[in-house]
Amino acid sequence: MTITERIIKLIKQRNMTQVEFARQIGIANSTISEWKKKGSCPSADKVMDICNVLKVTPEQLLTGKGIDDEEDIATSNPESRFTPYDIQIIDNYHNLREEQQKRLVAYMETLKKLDDLENI
Image (cartoon, rainbow, N blue to C red; front, side, top):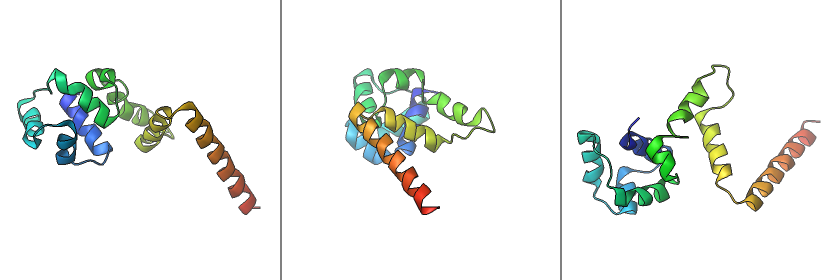
């Protein structure tokens, strides 16, 4: 997968429009179309802006680590319980501060207890 293909994939995953994405990183919408048509890549000075908007690291964007293999993880084993949405939730969890992660785990445990009580 090319950098441009990763960017387009991430824009879709983030439920953004190309116009919104272009505005946030400070480029013309036509620039994204040029990347697609010509198979070119964004300029080096825009990589950090792109990473900030799409909430990925430069390594992820440039190598595809955690982006390209995301679908492979979800589909490599037909019996896998993890969907691409599950993987996105896990990724979001890892982007939280430690205190927020602990709070989220406590919420999940509380929800499970409530569900168990309701099903008695």
